[in-house]
Image (cartoon, rainbow, N blue to C red; front, side, top):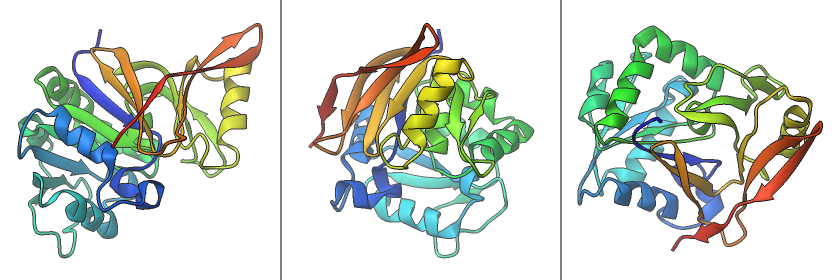
Length: 243
């Protein structure tokens, strides 16, 4: 059993405001509420995007008024006009109420994190009550395996952190080839059984068990995808619409 609370977003949140069309994302609101704090400490980890300054600015716009914000930069970027602390000190993750991982390259994220010792720190943080969250690559990283475009064309990836067993597929309805390729890989055994989430949908996990699927869209979907006799089978999950 992996202790802790994880919120894994197939898409949406402050990274994809077009999904929810509101000033603030209901999925981001849920993340803040999961901390149980009125003004929580939230650290953004934009490794998968190479610490893109524009991404850090979007994080600041979404959270600065509602949280004590910071950024963990493993590339030594300054975030341009970001007003919170930007530090290359991975141990800062242990001081957070929530850690929010951005999208980009899952493979690059995992490689850089391992060089800096983040897997052990994140596991320790989760066990101490820090909520772990992320979108796209920030969803994939927590699972044992995933569907990724880190290498150009979509491909299976097998070296995730494994805080959640099985595989993950974000952007299930948001990118043309995501669903078909994921079903194919599950069916042929290239990926283990797993979970798929549409843009705007997140899966909430606690102590290694799925608690619920939630959506900031009225039509958002999530699925358990399993292999049966060489064929992938989608089982729809109940989805609670937020807001």
